[in-house]
Length: 233
Image: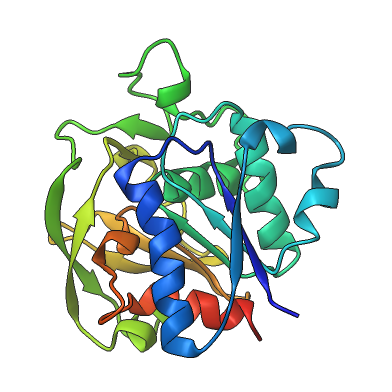
């Protein structure tokens, strides 16, 4: 039976969202799979029975495109993937929400906030805050750390990536991953976090960049291909 990926987000037909659909097809062709996928509106997961929807899935992709209709719905999906060992990838907003879910549910930082959901977008105390210089529409280099899943997948010390985000982890909280279940596996050239991965998990990776836009039938993105491979195990 074909496996299925649930893409968690509110579909807006944006460039990065269309690229998610296309990148899965690129990796399917590379691997010889027929992995299905469907978008799941965040509001449908904002209830006590959200696991009934998620347990039907073989993989979860926390997508770009925030602010979402339901912040809680998006966090529920991430928590489910983390706790139930479901292969998960988060990109752009997905990365931001992975950080927020971890802070709230593991570190118990109950007041952790994502500024995009607040009246004050520039709140300096938000966990996820508006960047002083937006990365939207820019390219940048990510340095891959040794002895990480990211290094195994990319087999490179440095990769060039595309960004479509204006929000990221507040520098005040850059040490929240120290001595945690998460490993920082990629940083930019000034050591700002760009990739994180959950250590004791089959596949749980989040990137501030959007790997899906660097994918084609000729050159499927290696991170997404590995995600699709894990979904089909």
